[in-house]
Image (cartoon, rainbow, N blue to C red; front, side, top):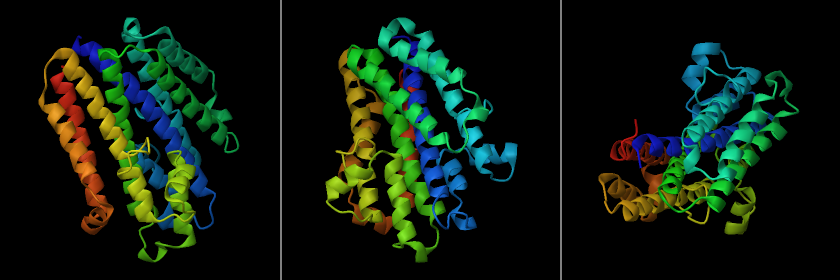
Length: 315
């Protein structure tokens, strides 16, 4: 497969996943903004949302002070923000159109119809009361795309490159949510273990659709930071955990290895990340520092994505 085609498939899926993740981050920011005490400066939910999405600096360069409606617009509709939902879905559609013949009709129509529907949305109409339903629409459209891809694509190189983009992006997002929660949302030690702390961990779980799954898995209605972190890092049963995403990255690379009959450095890098996650324990992670652990994971994930691009000759 041409590197240009592989790159388009990879980024098509990665941008759809990023659009969904942006909707999830905005949802948790919106929910936390409605909680008592959220207006206190050290708990600025919008700063947390922007930092999680790696958009804080670009937002400040354009708008300066933090303002809820501006943050929502910047993350949903702003063409100057390459990670806004609008920018991501446009880029996903453009990449999909470039490789239209490599996609099934269902996958392409999912992308195209989502973009056409989004183009009809007036940003001014997404007021605070309409924001939750609009964010839900974005998530549903992303899941419809993923369902079409899983249900109709042949298990060949277009499928594997699409899966790589999806799970590289998902792993990065989950790590960012956890990291920012721990170091921006609640920096005061006295807050840890409080009712507010528990509510915020609950919202983090909701942002990755893991609220009920957590309670079922641990048989516990209390939100403990080490258990929430364990669930989102080390539990392969959780489809947005780092371990789950890393496992699927390895499956996609293994599929390419079998298809092309060659193994590269990126395969070993992905396998090393997976092995490290499977051998990790939460007590060791907390003892050495959750922030340091997540920072290393994000750096390794970025290096892996660069290695994949170089290996398969992405332009």
